[in-house]
Image (cartoon, rainbow, N blue to C red; front, top):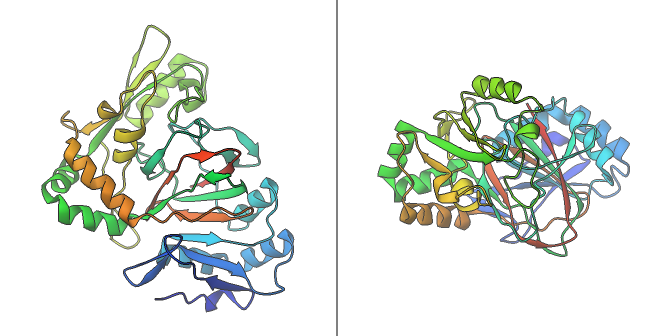
Length: 334
């Protein structure tokens, strides 16, 4: 059970939590949890200085573990979170083509999906439906939910192998064909929907012709509907990706997220994802996939000031239903 963080110096140690908040998967803790050693890093400025000096080691640990939870660091507001991420020398990812309604908070910090608290957001890789996607994600807990509201994380390399063992023909077909995602975007953001980001926000323009141009750049076909909504169908994209750094295959898709969660007054989830040849997903196979993801998921309980660093190649994430208030913020990186 490897949790060697000696490379980070004596200011930070690794925490071990009981299941289900942390699991041992293939002999390794998931996620890695880091916390300041006693009496160290008492301000956000000290924390930022430590991050600057350890950024290469932190990124190496992320590659090894897939997800890192920074707990009990003195990051008490969104501005501290923004500075924390920027100390790692990441560049912000422009949120073009994403489905979730979001708003800017400060700097490059966004709100997370603002859909209603009784809406489950199933497991997905961030923007797996798009040809361009963020490589690293950060989430920050400004205020945890009264109840629920976990951000479940799932090791993608591991579940790929599990699903392939259970449904080999389905996985083979996915790898050969890829998938397409179908979504109807309203004109304006619809905060009652987990995929309610309007086409104006999605493509960062009020001009329909500019939105069409950006669709073309993404390889997305479109159709304008009578109510001003825009129906989009992505080009065929992989549902399994090999990590270019390690060669390991990941369950890199939003298949379950679309099939279970892309539901609102415009969209029917069972028709939101299909094989590239137009065939739909089999319900019984989707049940197997969802159970496999559930079995591997880690549901740690958010604490104020927590920062979750996610390698988007290596881990899926989602959102459980919750009792408000809850405020989790995000920073997406190129």
